[in-house]
Image (cartoon, rainbow, N blue to C red):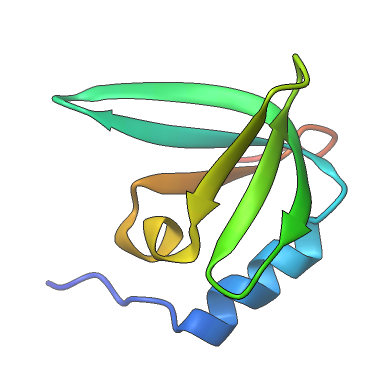
Length: 82
C-alpha cells in the first residue's frame, strides 16, 4: 500500500504550528544513517525552513525534504509522543 503524501500547503501548515517551539527532528543522512537533532524552527521561507539546533548552529532544509521523508518532525519535547 502506498503512503499518502502530504500536500505542500499541509507541510507548511505543520511548520507554522511548531515554529518557535522546541522540537526534535530526524534527518536521514543516507546509507541507513539518521541523526536526531533538537532545536527550534526559526524562519520559514516559501521553499526552505531554518532550524536552529540546540547548540545554536543554523541548519536549512527544503520543504520537499519533509514531503519525501528525508526530514521528519518527531514532535514537541514537552509533549509525550507515541
